[in-house]
Image 1 (cartoon, rainbow over the protein chains, first blue to last red):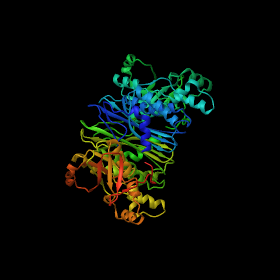
Image 2 (tube, helix red, strand yellow):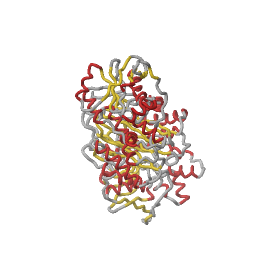
Image 3 (spheres, chains in turn cyan, brown):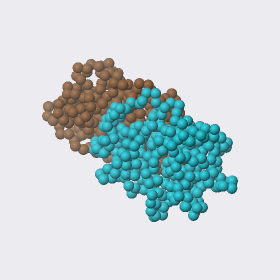
Image 4 (cartoon, rainbow over the protein chains, first blue to last red):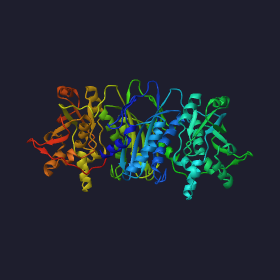
Length: 312
Length: 312
């Protein structure tokens, strides 16, 4: 009861009934009206202290990130975000911390029209489980399983910024502006909606790193991917790091990018020109298995088998 | 990737696409088709080792109970169970344990038509978060907020069995047959559906104990409840315990009953006669605030303020 009152107190602004929320937080269940003719996309992710984030992370960032990682899953399906349920496990009740967490959650939730409709709070090690539902128009969806040889492989944004921030933090160095890539990732909801409306049908979000996630597309689609190392989109900080260290591992195997990786037939490449955001063609889908990484001279680079990042 | 493969391996039988499951476990989101004209009831609960169950609980019981406590929330809304997402945090991967957990989950899921459509697995203290969605016909719903003075208060089943089992286990005694009330509660899905179809509009499930949960109904409905102690439905084991100890605390304040407590206007009482299950009238809704407990002689019993049960 005290726990429920806690959630209600901190999340009351987000849990108000509205058009499609017939009953929000406060009863045994939320009651929701799905829009006629739409399908639902559902995802759920857990973040655990020390495994997915530093325990002393700013609570505003954690509130943001808990929602962002789930929004990123919806983005990769081209879904429109709608309802969240939140289970928050806390070692102790710290009101300042909770206010920060709610602020981080709320700011991002309002940006994408997410309503908190239920969940619970309990005492335990610091962890957050969020379940998120979005709407998808029938026939308009992006999957991991629809890539075909001949498709081109694209990514949004730049890769490796979050991984470099993590590496610097672990070495006791200040990552500066890079920290927000790790702690306040920006889910590509708008881009995902535009891609699916433009006709893109294969997409994944980059949470575990390019090689692992593009590998998921290859596995589910029954094909392989060739990535050209020199085409990988890098920020200037990551580019300097790669030039100094000669090591691409954090770019291709670092996690927490939350960019979208998508494929489309080469013949339809021009549809991207109409979209108001940048994406980079990094390679192509080919027959076979797995992901290969090519240097400029055409030689294969060996792929890092493991990279120290937060487990997701 | 390994974690996801783990979920897929253990839950593959439950995650197969079907009529309303267009895409189950294995992509970034599940894709689901809600039935036309229905509303959705959504709930999410977390169970944490030592807080909600003994860490050495039989994994079959834990798989059952994780789903049962969420089903119980759907039961109290009169909803028809549909889709589950599961986040499982495990200290280590123990295949025998996982097989048992899945067996407990699956047996109950099949009984009530629940499909597992997503979720994740991670390393951490043993805890389970489950999110469950059910369907509700518009206009047919049971809430906490619709009780009115003059309503009669009913409960299904018997009260206090789980609390007595917990008390015996904590004292190092074998609770025998009572243990299943604590570890394998039977969610009242069938009863909840029948109640809502019969026209009952106020209901809650008893997870925190009668006084606390009936108190939720009173609080949300803006009224009070009077409960007659001698009418409380007790099993013979609990009756003996109460007679010996003179203490009703575990009956009215013990948690984990997962029975339904519902109210209806006295004028419609006869509708219960047509239903194929027993329920007991334990009192009535009156003007005022809070829950009072009356002895046979009409004197008020003081209500236990706290009772040692698993925190939920």
